[in-house]
Length: 302
Image (cartoon, rainbow, N blue to C red; front, side, top):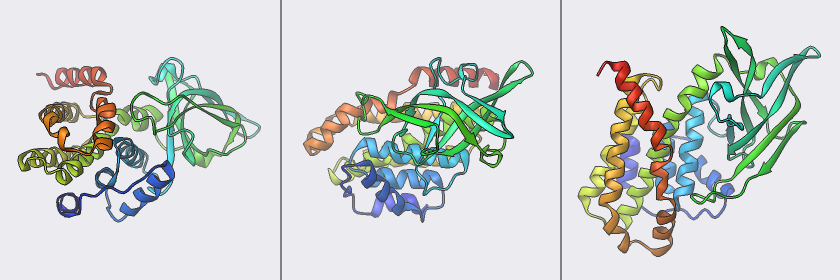
């Protein structure tokens, strides 16, 4: 696998990226890797901080789920006041004046102030008693779109989040993505994001481990998890077997993070301090993932 060769044989020297614009330019260098998961891993390996590894994994998640061009900075706009589950979506896409109009409010959008394009989950109506969701792809500068930056989070504060409002935004029919907005885009998002973001962060850990001369056995174990995540990325994100296997890999990653704890004493202080601040990344949405894995095992009949 070329990406594993790259991570094991390239010089483990991160590229300084003090801004998202600098990260974005760096991430574009990995376009020659054909798979989103490989670009996520390459971006993570080159990053100088966990936040920018996360950004590479998050961007390539959208590429994987939506099939959008890798070279367009994009945000996925789903979360509203009640969350991101289908019945919480109150943003609407409705016929108006011979076209379509987008109206609504998204309370928390990752990379919302940075993205050039927005993927907006909206309700088109009700079908069989359930919200009929679609995803519209629009330019962030379109008339009627407003973006307000939210305060930085305690972890990965370099990654901006925004509150977005859509006031009678004109949407062309060709800008509505094909397929069910929930089953094809919203539902797989969490699983695909877990896989791609984790792969990027573990790749960053491999870079740190190699340049800080951690034990070879620890580097090998980290790369084994990368190989597993690369395989999982090719599986159906809605299949219960995928959720069961991903939960097992997540558990392995947390065990490796614990095993590596003594090694941080030999890492340069700025890098070690960023990891101390951001290491909760591996536990984000852990409760939801555990419920998902439990439901997967029930569906598998085990």
